[in-house]
Image 1 (cartoon, rainbow, N blue to C red):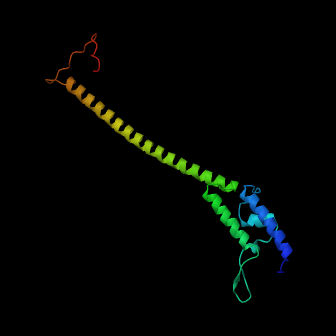
Image 2 (spheres, rainbow, N blue to C red; image 1 turned 90 degrees about the horizontal axis):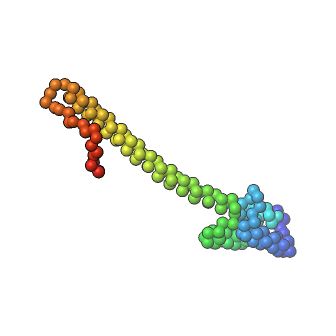
Image 3 (tube, helix red, strand yellow; image 1 turned 60 degrees about the horizontal axis):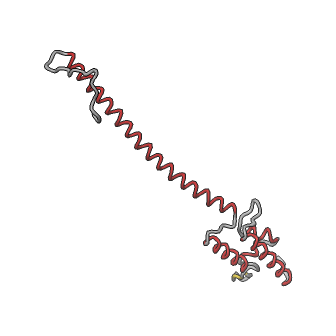
Length: 163
């Protein structure tokens, strides 16, 4: 890969800074993210310039735009720390994650409530069945000859309040 001139590097850095400011302001193109790839694509430079290189002897050297990539990542982290998400897709994903967690909580509450109501219904049906069996048993006792007598039914009398 050929080396670039100082003039070309300055122009590229200016273009990168301009794109960096747009991306961090939330002007992310459709189908892109707020990341190094979009930064390189929008500025018209190779993405490899943002990452460290190796000399022929194997020793590391910084990429020509690595300092800009670090600045971009630092500024992006600061924005996220303050609660600002410049990438609309990432903001939508975060909002949907919060919504999903809220819906999961509501669903768990409803499942718990349904479980309690199901238990209540089973107890109520069991009590009704037991009362019906007791009523049938008492009717059978009345029908057979024994010392059990039925109470007289009052046809016109009203029950006292609260009975």
